[in-house]
Amino acid sequence: MQKINWRPVFVSGESRMAGLTLYDKLWRNHLVLERDDGSALIYIDRHIVHEVTSPQAFEGLRLAGRKPWRVDSIVATPDHNVPTTQQERASGVDGIADPISKIQVQTLDDNCDELGILEFKINDRRQGIVHVVGPETGACLPGMTIVCGDSHTSTNGALGALAFGIGTSEVEHVMATQCLVAKK
Image (cartoon, rainbow, N blue to C red; front, side, top):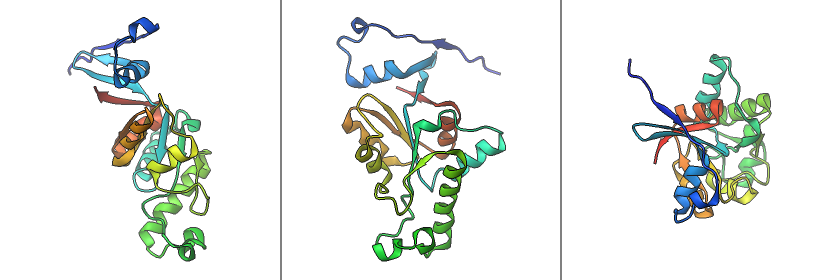
């Protein structure tokens, strides 16, 4: 088995940040550990979840007997399976015609209710496209690290954030540890 060499990182002082790009500053401010091969563990400030990539993550935590590390860092919203007309949305989850879409949205509601995660449910006026909801509600701010199981999450970089679209297994890892393994 290969030995993993992690080095703890502590960055302090403005002088160590002079001349760095915004990306480098955000990376350094959120760096927890760095490995000899260049991979790193970075702290995540905000985790946005939706109904497509989160069910497996919630179930993985459940099977491992774990809970999210920081529930207050997670914001959820149904996104990909939400009807687009007011008439369809009037009945909430019951108004979703496709049975698989309905199950996914209901599962997100159930998981968030069970764990006390803030969710902008289907009829909440704040509900919307996952990578737009964060900035619109003030959940995503400059200087944050942000992740979501959605490839468009990186658009939050326009806010001066360091944002990543991540995969389902990474969704579970961030929920459990509040950190992401990444390479700069």
